Length: 365
Image (cartoon, rainbow, N blue to C red; front, top):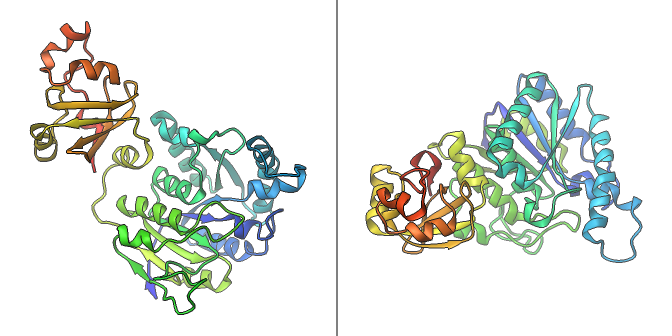
């Protein structure tokens, strides 16, 4: 069994633990999780919860005779969110704070910083932040879509050192344990690669939206940002006794030691790319070897529709090598690509700078 230490953790609890029967919140699997959270806080540790279950909790209050529409699911979430929060609040003697997010909140740098400040202030005042996606208003293109990845984003914005994903499975196996009884638990993972992702099967629970694939995606984001990730069985009360002792009764995904700053993490993992800039070899060498900004002279092609300030991927020979914030929109870049920076004003009638992606707004992939 692996060992771990931590100070600030995001604990993700899925729908299968919140609403095991598919509707209505229960404390069936939450009491031992709550005891672990309380005991950890008494030791001076900080905890943030990412909780699923709002749609399941409100399912009985919206009468449908068919597959629920988006509006009906949003109505379920609106009713169920208060029930889910009440369920959590009843387990603690300290304040619980509701934090509802959408992907767009994480995409916008100003809101990202505000979320970070709010979470820090809640922890300073000994409240328990309980995060969920704002399903009531989010539309598909503005949704994270699953709470495993939302938990990873929360760990990034909160600058946590640990993500604990409480599932209904013991961890990552070398085969699907539901189909192969002799499947073996993998206690430690040092790197997630293509072969690791192949171990992920389909969604295990009919209640939630995430299977092992989304858990691996979350772990991958966190590992690359210096955040260790655990997958454990949240239904087993003994699991939390082990966790309290610093042991991992599941799978530990080890954090990479090389960690960038908070802005680099935001650029790399949170922002959705809106376009692609294909560059030549000279520009590629300037970016990778000299840490330079990207100038229009090195641009070969521009694809996608994006505004100034949107995130774009920078490709060399169709492979992504960097990601950053464009200083010009796609139409402007198409006009000035391949040109010397000093000609930008003459070509466009104005200039916002020589670089089309500044080094301070860029992260290498």
